[in-house]
Image 1 (spheres, rainbow, N blue to C red):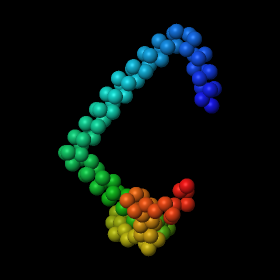
Image 2 (cartoon, helix red, strand yellow; image 1 turned 90 degrees about the vertical axis):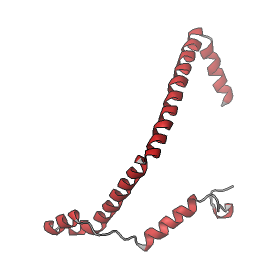
Image 3 (spheres, rainbow, N blue to C red; image 1 turned 90 degrees about the horizontal axis):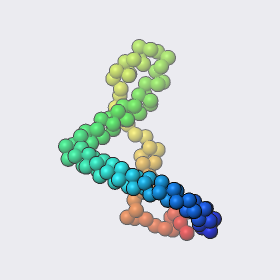
Image 4 (tube, helix red, strand yellow; image 1 turned 60 degrees about the vertical axis):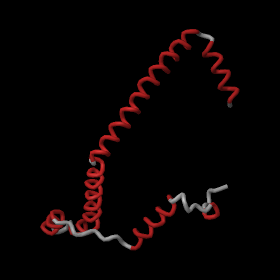
Amino acid sequence: MFALFLSKLKILLKNPMVLFVYGIMSKWYIMIMLTAVVVTYWVFQGLTDAGILQEAEKVVSRALRDTKSVARYCVPKIANLSDFWYCLDNPPQYKETKEEKDFEKGLNDLLDFNNYEQSQDPYAE
């Protein structure tokens, strides 16, 4: 595989114009990408310091909770439109089921790398 790559690279480098174009493209890529990464970091750092990201997370979490509540409690009432619209206007408090709690616990255990046991991992070598 590497030998095939080297043979293709040798063919490309026979033409001096290829090296010139790749040089310009790589310099442009480094200048633009480095600037974009630095600016993005500082923008998100500023948003975090101002508390905007935390507020956005609260809004998204509330919207997700309301969406789950509507999906569970309001969709069965779709046959009666007045009950359905009332349910959409005033969605009931969402309560997690036992299966959801077990799933979230399993997911958190799976993502907890501090207590990683290789014997429990079926894909570990």
